[in-house]
Image (cartoon, rainbow, N blue to C red; front, side, top):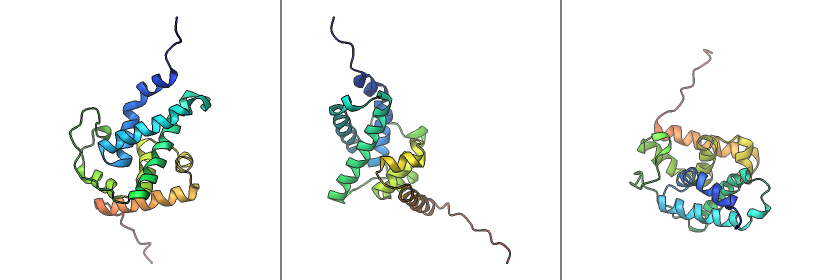
Length: 167
């Protein structure tokens, strides 16, 4: 009787779609998202022996995706995003949302700001963990998030009106 199934393979099978969606939101392109996810999975697979709990593997994969994407962006700085989501089976828009304007606005953000928005609001991570995954301070992560949200509000026409104090 051979050894049982590899726990890492089971992790990938269970979390692949969610990780691919996260990669898509980070990159803005289905093909780049697949490449990014596969590269991250390969990097984590090599070091899977040092991961104490398999539940932590998802965090390692997310961190590897963000770091790889930011590194790639720094090298090329020629990112071209399209406002339309291509019809590709297996990659559904987040929560069924089909608002192309939101996708275009998210795609126009710099990679680190987009990563903060994805990690915080799509993956629902606390800000401390977002900062850890981006390898930056909490203050820097909050600054990226504030700038990203200001840009998104402006682009989507949701500027908050400041109500005067009557003075």
